[in-house]
Length: 178
Image (cartoon, rainbow, N blue to C red; front, side, top):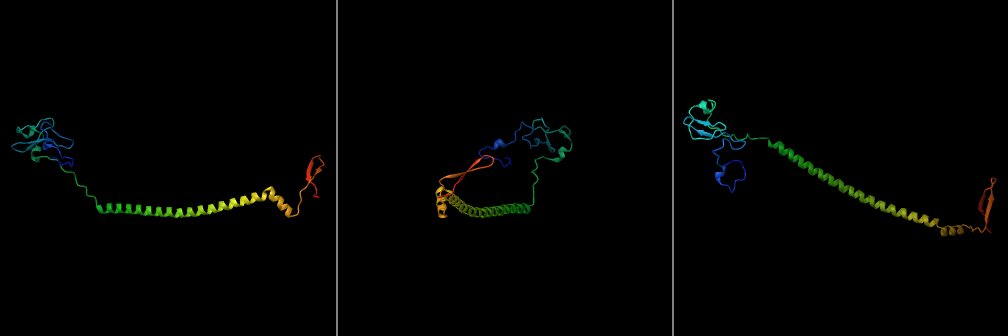
């Protein structure tokens, strides 16, 4: 059975047995081996696995291969990074994020209150401006002007007076009231 950690449920064990007709199986596999009377000798790439014993070490490669024994894949070197600094870093990042969000939400709420106060003040100023414009329009109306003039003792003019200037222009001026 493979030790890959992959999904193996529902498969036959025969699927995972090494194939005898391939010198290697996969990117990380080693050359197939066969045992002899003297030692385990790896088969050269391109040769098929056979049960025939090797006669000499020189026929299979270097002479030191027979002294090594069976070759097998070594597990990857364990990575042992210190956990405390990593945990502290993650904890600091999470806490700073939470504090940042809390400060941001506090500022948003604070600005919402300021905005509400400013909107209320603006509404009051808009009402005052509208009232003042209405008062001004009312005071500038001809009816109001006539009543105010009468209050101060003024009377309407019936005949206008004309002034002739030295250059020949005529200016119309109201005459005295009778």
